[in-house]
Amino acid sequence: MAVIRDVMPAFELFQPATVDDALALLARYGTDAWVLAGGLDSFDWLKDRLRRPAVVIDLGGVSALRGIADLDGGLAIGAMTTLTEVVRHPVVRERFGLLATAAEAAASPQIRNQGTLGGNLTQDTRCWYYRAGWACYRAGGNICYADTPDAVNREHAILEADRCVAVSPSDTAPALIALDASFVIRSPRGERTVRAEDYFVGPGFDITRMTDLREGELLTAIHVPADWGGAQFYFEKVRDRNVWDFALVSIASALVADGGRIERIRMAAGGVAARPLRLVASEAAAIRM
Image (cartoon, rainbow, N blue to C red):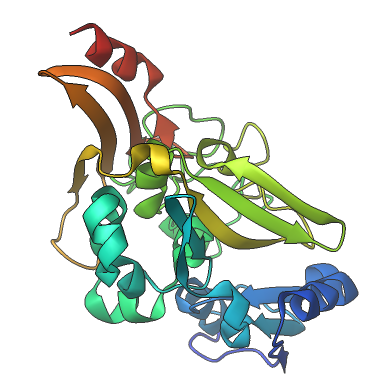
């Protein structure tokens, strides 16, 4: 039987106006619901009919999830703020240039115009075996097709592999880890905050998901502390194409130096493990230099 592609399955669309409304819909429909942010990751899943939710909850009308504001000298960024808005915001560019640089490295200008910061952080892995519907470990099967001698796995994990070698594709994640950001998560039960480096999980923790988001929860905001405002930074993304490509490896670092000596530094790498990795040993080595 032929597999029908590029024809979305039918679903019921909800467009809530508030976070509370969105959470109520998530509580009502549970695993039958799909959350839509910028829609770029969602579009691929839905058009290929690999995800068939009964309900789609479009967050585009929730104004409380958009915008960039001062937070005690740092930043409070709504999860639905587009990557282009992050890149162009004057305070982000002036005081948190690492985040602006990382956001600008994502995809292409057209995708950044639509894609959101929360979506970039929370998107599913881009492993082509998994995304093509192969019955791999992550999809409930008993094999990792990317972890074989003849596999196409140039963009897969070389560290911390545990059955699955798929990686988080987020370009902004290493930068936010380096900036010691925290993520605000809401649910009907209340609100919790997790550090950026703890938001992402590997297959050893739960092979079915990439983040610490639990059923019924929404990522609502990203907080960047003032401590790293104005810090020197470095960001590099190695990829096969200059635009619209995922990282083979990326590195993000923020540092504060005095008299040519590093006083504080945070470093993180992307594209090399299932989750973005904070490079604690490298930080310690840099301090000793």
